[in-house]
Length: 83
Image 1 (cartoon, rainbow, N blue to C red):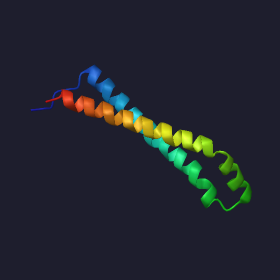
Image 2 (cartoon, rainbow, N blue to C red):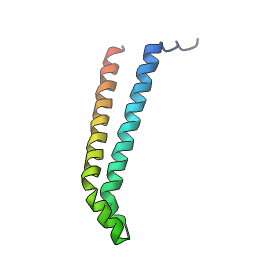
Image 3 (cartoon, rainbow, N blue to C red):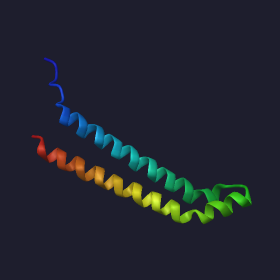
Image 4 (spheres, rainbow, N blue to C red):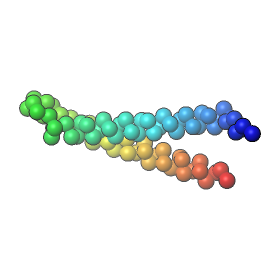
C-alpha cells in the first residue's frame, strides 16, 4: 500500500524546515571561514582584511547557530505532535 501523500500544509512546513536548516549551515560555515581565514591566509594583506572582518564572522556564526536552534526546536515540536 503506498504511503499517504503529504498535505500541502505539511509539504510547505517541510520545505520551510529544510530552508531553515540550509540557512543555518550556510551562515555557520561563512562565519567559520571568516574567523579562521586570518590564521590560514598566506598573504599579509588578506590576513589584515580578514582580521578586520572578525565582527562579521562572529555575527554570521551566531546567527547560523540561532537558526540551527530554531530548526531543532521546530523539529522537536513537530515530533511531539505526531504519534
